[in-house]
Length: 326
Image (cartoon, rainbow, N blue to C red; front, side, top):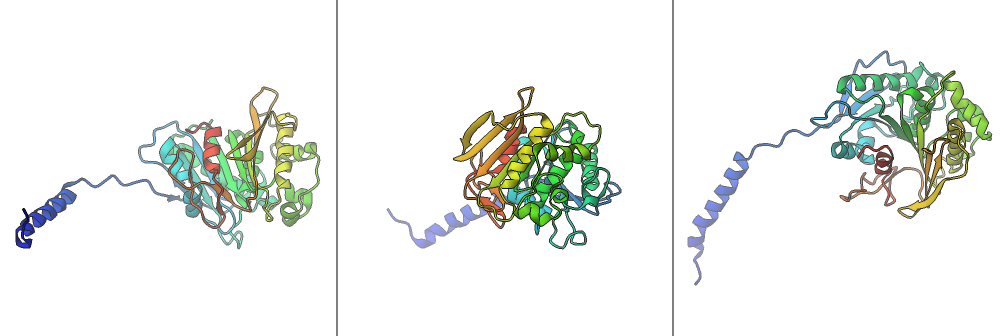
């Protein structure tokens, strides 16, 4: 049996009204966390901006990740592009996102090569350290589980923070970055990026030890991600980072683990106590940028874009797992 169009109208109107009432009566979802600027976090000698992401309902005693953007980038773009905020919601930790200002560097690069910004208690390094202290106080974070990571110039500044403030960080992740003190060794940042300074492992290690005189450890563990087709920061910088931080940790330069992850060469170097002190991912064919793997899978995170390269491996996820964040 068929119905006329006129007979259908009341039924359609009733359905529409029911749907409208359902929308009106459904409680609005709680507001999601968002990136927030923090002011007055210290004397801020490096004149940086501080942003942070704190998941709603984050309990006390949770880890803190400091994520440093690359040149031409900003805190908000790096937060979403890397996937760190997504992982923060999933695993329960907070993220500090320092932001460079054009008054410090026209390309908004962190000044990993300026002596005034890479020493303990000075410049940008001191500003980032003050952000860590403020964040730990505000969210009652776990001071033994603070981590630092960054891309390119942010990767260079990651090495700075690990060297100048080793007591603040359990581990660091350098993405397409450079060893600490490279510009001093090479005489210019561009030689570091395009050629790499010639130093022995002991000389590289001495630069780190000089950044924190008298420090007896423990030193932060290091993970490095580097594209083999990176022509902005040459892959030899990863070798220099391995030389530097295995020396700092008293480890040899023979990998204890040599396998592949997502099809890419992966190496782990263990220290005298048997713990992993340096880990590397050599991303075959990848250029200059942050490795991401967009999608909804457990190991996927990040969003593809300028300097966010979809290579089916998400650096933030791999770091989070190495750091036991989730």
